[in-house]
Length: 291
Image (cartoon, rainbow, N blue to C red):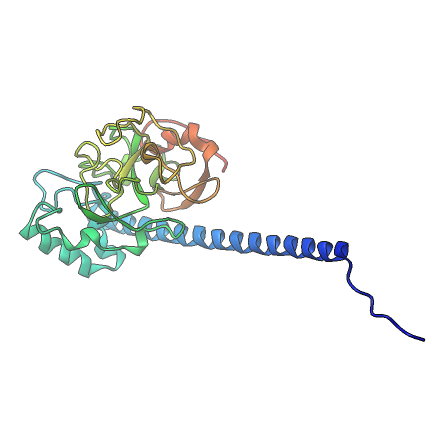
């Protein structure tokens, strides 16, 4: 008896291809989810270290560092991040900042300070899309994805980190577990806002550079097509200049925040209505939130 080899029909081949496509899709989705989870965990760890350094600074000085100082200060426009460099185990970068400021108080130079374009991994979110950029004025600067919370509304000083701030734990009468300290926001598409080392911000106050209000206002001539605001906590687009004025992240569904007690928490975008209350240190609000 003769036996014929049975061939594979077109329908069977299509079924096999469809099954393989589904399996590949599931594997890729799992890989992407694992990658996103890893990035979020790394981001949380960076924020936790920044929060710890801010607490150490408070223990040493008796208050949190200023968001920035401008006048009558040896380090005009230096960010709160720069001021805690020794507590982030980066004494060499701090000593370079001290030396550069002593020679040139203007951090953009000439010559520009060495730290201005130096990448600082601890202030970069692994999910972020850029780390350094150059402005139209040909200034190259390295970015931060973590901004201090200055208050509830743009220009207000009722948060913890803002121009000339020196906030103590005792000043946070809303409770340290109910008051925001740091939040996520990627740098602006024009590369002008989001410098970690130093920056003038919107109004010589560091705003949108390394400090930001929960309901920030557009107060800069650099975003003429963006509404005045205030801007809500919502998803953003790295190519939209208007998203410079509110907290957001590349993580799905929300962003990470550090509270004044040092805890790190992921807040989903539906938390927008309570974010201004969480951003104030002594507003007397009672906030119940669930992320």
